[in-house]
Length: 115
Image (cartoon, rainbow, N blue to C red; front, side, top):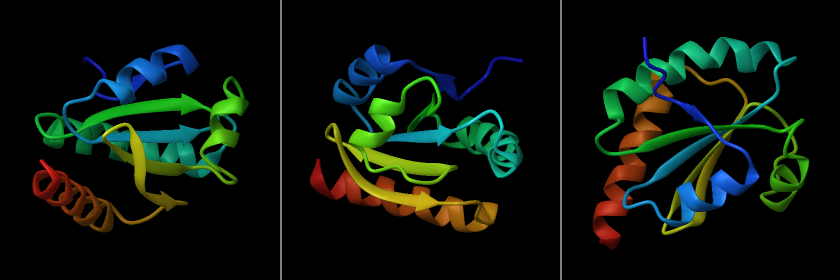
């Protein structure tokens, strides 16, 4: 099955986030992080449901520490929403899927209001 959440490096991150025509949710994670591993399948499911309205990416903070530092990521998992190339909201830690869906819906509505 094709993965809906694409892992990117620092250079790909810039192109994907800056050039996006819709909100981008970035999962800042670490492979050793238990909650991150629990979040991965939930995020894949949400990405499949929301892929027409939101782009989903993931960044390994161990491989891109400068990127994590630039955006103030101090804990994993951190989900950060970008719109217009800039961070507009974030969730730190593992939250219930329903709360994530509400967060995604708010991001889409906010993006539509700005467009």
